[in-house]
Length: 169
Image (cartoon, rainbow, N blue to C red; front, side, top):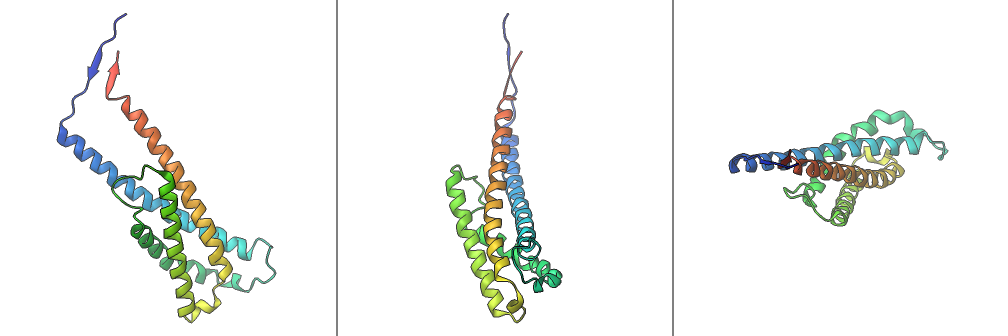
């Protein structure tokens, strides 16, 4: 048996355009991952504080619309902090530990800003600090987990993409 190697030639400009498109797509997917992690973590933090039964006082449970309306502030603040921590760079961080450290810095900045806003606004006095604390912990860990699985999917996709460079018949 003999094997024949077929090499597909792709023009250089098309390869560069493809890589730029993939980088842009991965950054957009990272933003969507972060937004979904924020919404899920905030929902779990509210459930944990008001409906889990671990806390006696449930006076803030009647203001759930107020809590979820704060997501309109939390999401942009968190995305800006992620951008400032260089989490949306064109190059994907090869060291996952560095990305975890950047996430910790970003989430710490966003929680400090959120806590400051609760002390500066009149409505912030009614905002549960427990929700903010739970949100900080849950959003950080969910972001790490979601990004880990996304990195694994990208790695799997890139490994399967190498098979298409040379086809053995």
